[in-house]
Length: 177
Image (cartoon, rainbow, N blue to C red; front, side):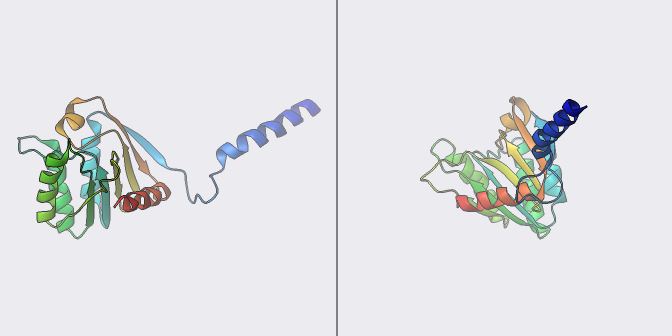
């Protein structure tokens, strides 16, 4: 009996820290959904359409072509529409040599339509692919905004419902520019 009680106490001491949120964490743990391959584009468009206050995102490559069925162009259109609805929209892009032209084309289209576009510091490559919507939803992973990434490549990202992670991610993104 004493051994069983001691084992139970020991188990509680070991397992309890795994169940308690870290210091400073508030509320419920994040809910997560994996976004495999082509699932990312639809999830991103849904989150943009549902945005009420703010969207901040960063992408290494945003290649919004003119071709029919181009998913990055659809994302750009949804960002523009969100801005027209009064949502604060900020897009952070990298300015490396290999993606400079594509990012400038996307930036021009977005900026002409009221979206705030920021180019990250040239001192460091910004390889981030992250989106924060309404300080609640976070999308982080491998997806760039290219037709290949959204429709053809093996890519993996995660959608989190977590105001805490959203706040941390937003602060990080705002620190890039």
